[in-house]
Image (tube, rainbow, N blue to C red):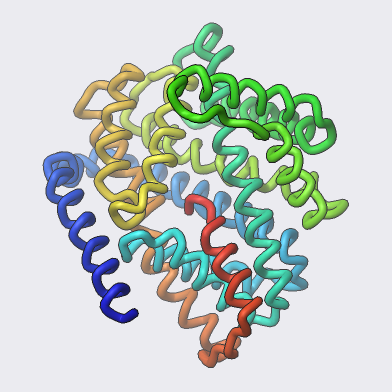
Length: 351
């Protein structure tokens, strides 16, 4: 048993090492632009940090509603600490989910409620991320360049926010949109993989998962939807602020595509937090969006410093605060609690 676990961890570390080695040129290029950060006006850093704080606060509110907690403190400290942990260990998404589950239980959230709430919030947040690229279809036709300044970017973000909330509300209230999406996805997959067994039941699965999320959120589903949309829009605006600070003028639709690609790459379990994959993917997609290569590298570095590296020390502080408030002893988990803890970890969203 122990030999198998050690072999699995060794294989994971080996894969991580090989991935980082192959991605080393991209990382070196991004971090090599560190001296160019002096070109940034310090006010842009404050704006980017403020947007990231807002993005994290939205995530806390989604989880607070989902687990039906009375206070935000155990939610915020556990999410920050587990998020930081997931960014320093290989395959950290599942480990971060298990860690937050344990911290929530220690903070007074019932085990079953913590597991179902984490799963529901994960499905909601990740579902919105999957839907974001769809907004680029009309924007690619009617979008316009972003003028220098965060004001224009905020307008774009507001439009995206309203579109995401409206689409999410329709999907939560009505069955037909989900059935149509499920049939489209199912049909596309079956056409691409004609030699494999046909995929069936996707529309029913979407309806079932939607109903589970709605049951957990209750009457406050619309609040959770607002905060879930805000979580991604504020993160997107952080990247827009970095681009505006270097006087780049890409179309908002193409930046949204680059942002979504970076978030999906961040979920890859090959490196901690998608390190290297995100840097390489974001610089490449920003270049496709019309950002000069040098500016794309600088914008990527600034964005990753604020969204990836800065939350790590913040998570360490949050872990100490959580331990001070709720102690460090973890109650033994029964078999059923272990199972729901595993399910919560597996359903953890991109952080």
